[in-house]
Length: 219
Image (cartoon, rainbow, N blue to C red; front, side, top):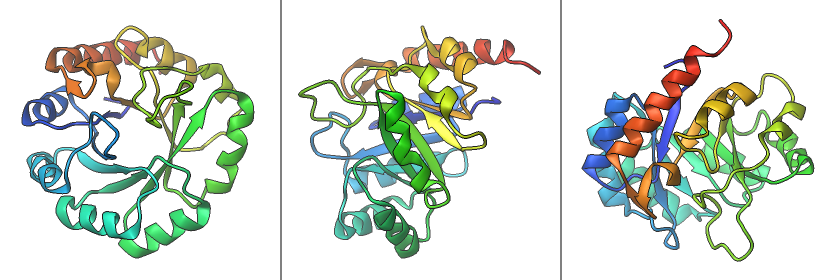
């Protein structure tokens, strides 16, 4: 596919196989105890081996310390580390140097002003990810099934490599891709039958919707 897709929050062989069958460019494993998608480094490592050479693996953490990152990198051998917390530019640089892995830095977006922080991370993180700000009272920084106003991204500097996330599903992905021209997309709750439970049928339907949207993109 011309628009790379990341299926995030995988926990089972069935879900990994569905993501690979659909053509996922990335698969993500979440290491955050409050999340229904939380997985142990050992279990994620077994699933990562299933995908090795077929999709890039991403380890998603939230303000993780070095000890946890050491355990994840040793157990999973991910291709990318995704930082979904409040990690500073200094922390991103430190993690890159420590592990020698590319880093995806996530940002919570609700209004145009939220893009101001992005500039400092360009050239520090390898890729950026734009997710919707959590609803009031939510404990999860992502995976809440809410979207933000994608038109905000029209103010983004051209050439920034990012993944679009937040509330994406088969019903709105065409509008998202065509409206933003996003270089890549990330989905989690939008392909679940219940929180943390990926549905192979919804995964397949999401990829079908992406392919239909790609046919409508300018040549």
